[in-house]
Image 1: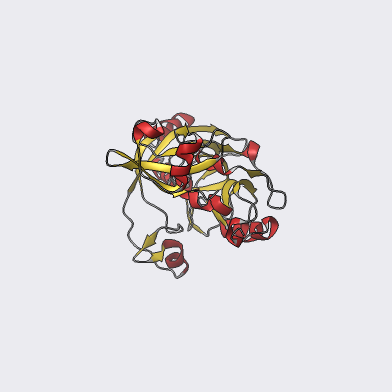
Image 2 (image 1 turned 90 degrees about the vertical axis):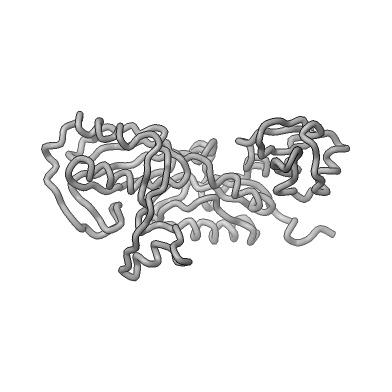
Length: 291
């Protein structure tokens, strides 16, 4: 008899998260909709933000760590002249500036300095832990602590003025761990004033886009293999598949792979068997998916 934990849906769900829902809210609701407790997400999205939230369901929850580091894409609005306590529209206004004299050329020049590999200080309203406590928990207590700058990469930063004075539409592709609200605040500072972020929408997580996204109430379940579609893949025959299912350490020649890995190992029918990683001169499983 199959274990109860092995029953019921397994795969990846892409949700278009509505505003005012936390990522935890989406997971909790999805457990009821999908009929399983085994649901997790690959990375939080702010409650006020909307857009792509990737969930792992059933056996796919074991693969979420391979999604965490995927790049992200966002669109949003940067409003110049107003700083807030949370760096976005949800916070209290902490300072105002007259930035009516800022020119389009100045904005575009400042954007160049915030594109590419940069160092970024995480906002206090983030999930990063310091001394065992998340920054947003400290922020709610009115405590601000020193944060060390972290390297991130802004691959693309396009910006255009909107019909509203002092408000620009930003279209950003960036590495995992990049805070868009911090980019907005830093842009305001670079222009001699301040700014905050509003109407943030995540349009993609790696290859998962809004075109694939369903609603919380009507999710679409993608196969487990979708979780590692961005990894190099190898297809094995039945004999090797048995060894993989038993978690055997294998040579790179046996798997017919090269490079550093990790590699997604699949059957000829496209079913994911495991994810293997480099181990000495061969490869070992980091995750084996029970069949």
